[in-house]
Image 1: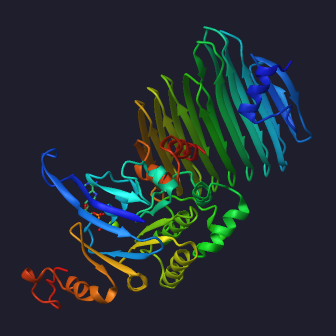
Image 2 (image 1 turned 60 degrees about the vertical axis):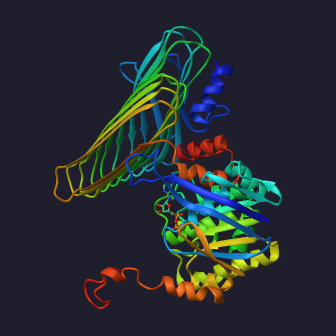
Image 3 (image 1 turned 90 degrees about the vertical axis):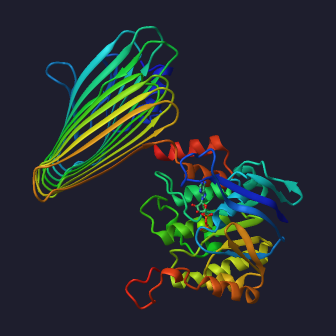
Length: 306
Length: 254
Ligand SMILES: Nc1ncnc2c1ncn2[C@@H]1O[C@H](COP(=O)(O)OP(=O)(O)O)[C@@H](O)[C@H]1O
Ligand SMILES: [Mg+2]
């Protein structure tokens, strides 16, 4: 059953007030809590029983799939393998995310391994939010892995967000982008206290005319630590860009390591990276419009992570 | 009434090694009174201290000595936002660029509301930027002219009593300068806004009731344009004369 904590988590990670419309699969503490399929979207437990298999029919339009995960059992470390097949010409939104409620001393964790096979001409938006709440002192650990295989003329937008609460996160994103396909990844991470995150990205522009834009926005509060790595490899005539910005608020510690690799003479790869305190000219501007120092800081961070 | 009393701004001289010892005076003992509803144009060579003076008034630069009085109240120690709330607003020469903030956000902060109709009215009043500007990110991709128009609009949206525009015309196309001058004049007349424009533009020099010429951190002249002309012409004379080998020579230093 869905209790008050579950509701709160569902609201936070998937913006759900109740059960979602359309297809969904809700997992709680390693078990299935609810599932709904649609005429075009099939969801099945995989053969090994350690995840789900989501099959979206070709040309499915304007449908969404919600696959939130709730974790509220002390000591549980849940690992799932989910596979998504997005059929040719489909246009869908996938809302994923994991919310941990930690009530005790023991750590809780979730590792979601998501594999996407995006067929020719398909378009997918994948929104993933990670949160952790609760009064418990146990560590909250989230280690998501995303593997993306794009055929030709496909488009994928991945929006990956983790705004506080998570003590430890190790993310790994891997992508292979086919001819004329476009992959956009936006990662937004806010850490505080002694939290730490690591994000590793291996992106390969494989097909002619493929494109990728990888954006990382980091805010570090307290003594937190964030490391961000991207290897963007071009194996064809393609275009790739990496943009990573980190704002250090207090005593945070950040590493940003973007790498560009052109294995093709017609590759065009660029990157921009910055690490620094909140920009003074932005603060001065907002204060000159009447905001207090703290209000100005909040507005800048809010916008930056939005 | 905005009164500057012996306003001085010193900063560490970057040219010398020991920063604690050597200070450079950037604004040097400036005293001046801006009357309510007056139109002032501040001009002077690059680096003479115009922006520094404007930032002292806004509270972005901290006074080294002197006092700033606004309507009888000493505002010298007030933080930027409180000066803004009191009615003093500064439009930056080099406006900040953000990531994840659009014009609508800035305008809403300035106007204190995100009501669409109110924002539309402000945009109509400002004139120089269109409605489709609203959702433009105020980031590095904006052109120099676009960001200056946005800057101007955010100042006007606050309904300032004293508005200071720091080179509002740089990067602005020829066709917008006229409307911009008219706009600031209209704001001055209709709202009795004390208007202070830092500019080298003839249009602003001619519009001002009072012209201030700043040289080396001091007010070298204040008065009407006519009286300033000899000094302005003097300044336009080449200062490289000692090393000059003639203007048509390829070794002209200008
Ligand atoms: N905070 C500061 N620290 C050191 N030098 C400064 C500072 N602010 C301004 N200056 C210097 O003071 C001089 C005047 O600058 P500014 O007021 O920007 O001139 P203007 O606006 O008239 O072109 C310049 O030489 C500038 O480099
Ligand atoms: Mg200046």
